[in-house]
Length: 585
Image (cartoon, rainbow, N blue to C red; front, side, top):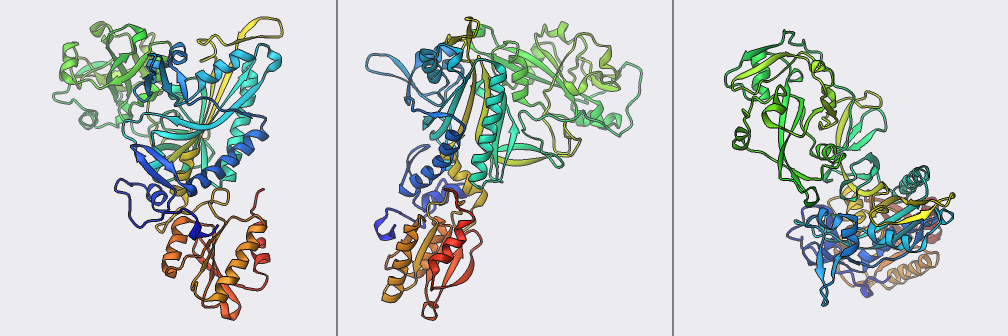
């Protein structure tokens, strides 16, 4: 392409709301244009990169046996009502009515639509398994869209859905999709991790996320320093806690502790490690309309050094059908109204005092002894507490994993890393097939609901993810599979006819061998051309300049900005050699 003929509106002006470098460079480099809050147009360069990323995804999905289709962006609301997600999805679901008062939604995801398709045509186990995918626009009405393409309201996503006759076959496809995704992100040249994850609003189980490691990432990943264990912090597990400190051995008794109303004060008062204290966290459970229940207080107990992981807590409550939408904070006045003393809440007689439906202990506390906890009486704590003597306690994994905790797989040290979620795979089971009455006949002629899987990749999010991991302070750095151009050819003096004609000849030769080349033929200052090369991020730059009269050109590698002198003679052959060991057709 000739720069003078291509629409690449580069600018030095930094977008006012650009917090991330990827947002800044995509706008300045002429890749995207904002037209509304969280809504971006892809300009020719942006569309070019989007298409290259989509091709990698499409090629690997097709190799796996998946088949591409295209579903409507607008979906009848009735399908979402049948699945139960119309209300549960929350305010991010954009609902609207047509002129006939029929309700619709703009699809943020398409589980309902694809289930309706397969329900209509697949009647027998002989037609299974089936994996259908699309690369399509989605819409999620984010309250605070930010970071450019990283968290927009409208975005491009690859979503695929598999249908199976058995759980075992779903497991097989889930494992295959994990490998397919690994292939995709490796081809895209990314440093990523596959992490255990929470299923969120999609539902189902067996959830894994694919995280691109970047300091600007919004997600916290818990990673082991020794083995491959990695998890989103919302789903992270750890080995059972231990403590080398001397335990506070004592017979069970009530102890006067005036004004000792925090874990920190309690540990200092008894001169013990917080490991041996019992922390009470009280939250207000807000139920959805299907539960038809008023809000109620729920109680969680952890070791004093731990914090409650809200997503884990919600999942524990909902696994038996509680239908809790959220867990809200509770103030001291509300606790007092329930007969409790803030700062002195403990498990003894708690159910009798509050009539609580949910009192949950962290799994790490199972059979714990030598504890100190609140007595449910102002200015008093119990010492010598042994939870093994309690009957019918509910133990669940509800604690947030901390840096320094031990790996559940190898006892290595766990640490935090930041990541950008670019892919997510789920085992949905019958989460959608059952409410939508999507069934088939098995080999015995019995009607069964489909076992389903769901596999998503944030295609448009991959643009900023690549840049957040790779780019420098000068502009975009792309990978081989995603770069808009393999090479930029820059003539330092376009008025020098020999330089220009040589550069144009090389441009035509490189195009013929299939390389994506941008020839900067503009009659502008050399410094501006170089700044645009660094901003746009072609993999290499060929500079035809002052050494041309000596039969030399400069080759600049954009990632490192290192320069290499090459002979003008047989330059095309030398460039081919540079690319032949990295190209993937």
